[in-house]
Length: 462
Image (cartoon, rainbow, N blue to C red; front, side, top):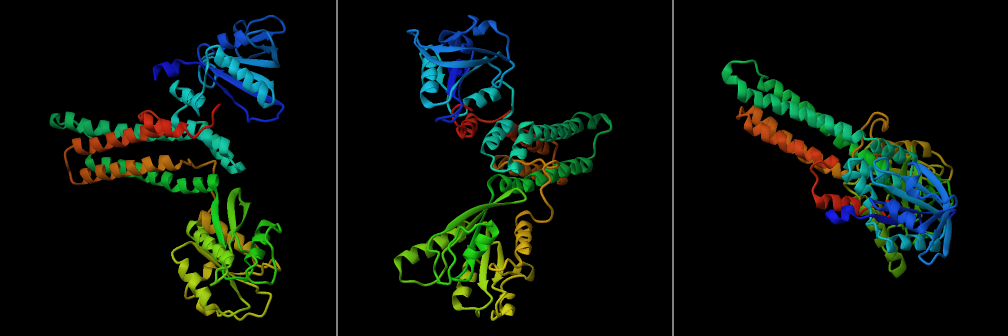
């Protein structure tokens, strides 16, 4: 492992294909030496002789002196680089051949191809960033909305690290007070009462609970919410999809069963991606093709985080409607009574037996009536009361949440030990466990398998 860390690594840091620029990145103690072996500057200067954060113009040449590309080289000497090692970036002309040949020349002269995420892993191992900041790099690359970009940028700045270190300090301070009780209680010196220690542990636990609750909203911002539009054929599901997405993506006809496969559309509400899926109408059918569509609809119901059930206000409630309602029992549901522009025959009182009044919305997908109210209701179901204030909240990821759940269990045991007036060693041990678990979030006590799992998510070159 030590030899691998001391290797000089190389990778292409830009997407393959035609582009204005293709970047080949080197990091490690021999980066500058290797770059000087394949680079000839216009002014005859060596890369090792130029200042850090400088750029130099010249050409990449192979071992036989053949010109490969016209390039600009950027040098960042340690520790003032992303990895805190010597880093050289060779800016080639975009394309596959020039960048690949340049990388091959680096390998011929002593570098090796970087593993996925190895540049960021070195930044972590060399103390430039903590583990939560490394994960923020992944989120930054994968951002699909402005909100998810802002969230990743905040975490890259170290917001999670600061919060975790604050919690760890508070836990450490409580442990000091517990140990002081052991050391000084026989000497009749003033020590912190057990009751006060309990309050301090409970306060930290409440802060953890808020972080855990906010994780769900963070996942919504990053990954979006899957919403399935379901109902029997010809109730207006495709019209609703078209209206919500402001596009004519789904085919709309008066013929029942027009949609035989799911149609997907992504739209954004308050910067949150909503993955809308218009499913095939659910009904009994002998047609093999239609049956496949119905089976897919049932699968989408299982996977969806929110169901938009569409009922036809112009038709009485039918047995198939009740079967669908029974199928989606237990899911988050908004019931949309469509076609309110036509004469109403649906027995709304029967619908209220299955859904709360506040989750029943009357709309006309054809005329656009009630759609704003529906959008607001979707937002309410997803976010609950209020919006996500990214400027105020610390948003963790699912790995952090898992660790915080373990920390919470340790704090519960500590509170129980204190309340039962057990000796100080018991709550102190639980607080020590909580302290170490928090350290896994920022990488201070993380195991190697955890690190490998995180950094394997990166692309090569990042």
